[in-house]
Amino acid sequence: MIKFFRHIRQRLVKENRTSKYLLYAIGEIILVVIGILIALQINNWSDERKTQNLEEKILKELHVNLSMDLKELQDDVSYMDNINSASIDVREFIENNEFPNDSIFKVISILRVTPHFDPNKSGYQLLQSKGVEVISNDSLRNDISLLYERSYPYYKRYEEERLRFHALHSEPLLLKYFTMQFNLSRKYYGDFKISQEEYSKLRTDDAFLKLLSAIAFENAAVQNRGEGVIKSIKSLLNSIEKEISD
Image (cartoon, rainbow, N blue to C red):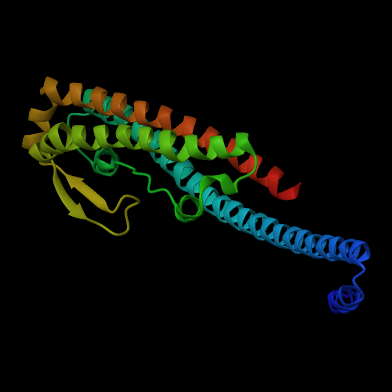
């Protein structure tokens, strides 16, 4: 088509028919502009499709990550239930039994457990590398950022505070009275043995009874925060599922 216009233009120039030449020149320009606009539109459609595919890929990876995070946190909260129960059981045993036995050996090891959460971030890291604007839904994008930039780090601080408490207070007092022995058959892979002499001292040690209350307090604080993060993860999973299905 362009060659045709050029041929006509050359003939008109030779025939000195200026007005018609201008008409055909304008037509040629319009044709070229239309071609450029069509090419640009096709390129835009291609770019939009690539962005949509990337968004879907990131959302699916986030969904996999969050599903794993949810399972891990739910398991951690379940362990924390056991810690809360163990704090009560150990106190009751000490108050009601003059001699140690296997019951306290089993339950005391639970007090040494400190569940910690290690979130899966491959999807969020991919989102950061590509730019958060890849997520077209403003509300969803904001919820993703809130979870990874605020909720997860805030929960981690709770865990770190409990770990410091355990290292400074729980561990030294537990090791003062109990001897740890690795036992693969136990749920928490350990036996905590105590002699009759040490057990008699333990029963009159007010600091140990206070420690039981403190362990329960620290554990409950982390557990409460963990349950809040679980709710946030569930909500975000639902939002991602809805976005993918739309």
